[in-house]
Image (cartoon, rainbow, N blue to C red; front, top):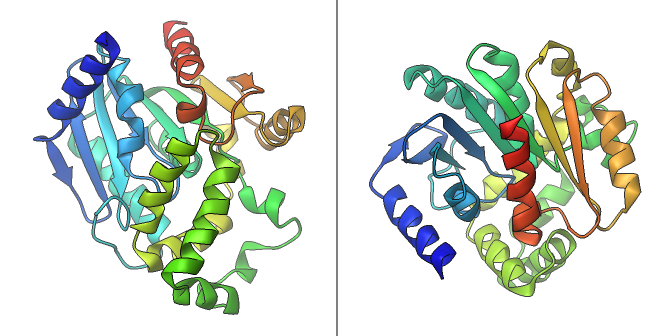
Length: 277
């Protein structure tokens, strides 16, 4: 009950303080050293509300990207706009002693920011984010081979409601354990701007954050979900982040991709331990 009341109060506090830029919207709350929360692809910042409520001694800066969570879409290339506006947000708000927590694609953005702000960012948490997703999903395919216009993307853009529902059901079942959480994320994805959902994923596939790794010296916590790939998921992450100097891995065998939903207590505990070091 106490936890529920804390979450309700935290969510209400977020509402009046909204800072909007062209490709991001940031809801802020609280005082103390800041934590910037970066969601994954097609997920609004709302996914972080419960997690952020567990860190009351930090100010929360919860990001939602253009095209998702009711935020107006922007032109492509989309990912570069997100990175540019996040850099501007940190600079214009003079954020320092900053911790960045990024899930999935948000982890790639966190790496971009850590490389850009070695003196402002003190710690980074990467939640189940591959440094180069393309290498794992499409081995041998160069970024230059991927474009917005393709028969597959045309098919996704043209999907009717029934086809989209089936597509998103399969996607969320693969990434989340609890049916109620699957439905929540499915609704978020269904309400996303369709063009951003399709073309933004191309931007994500083209990413390769590995060249940044040698320049990042701050401590990084790499959180890895064990489902559905088991210990092999940790092996893949270790290979992907081999060049990162100051890293710690946290692995849970009992979670799918959305760690903060599947294993919320473990997730917060691991971050608390990491921040306390």
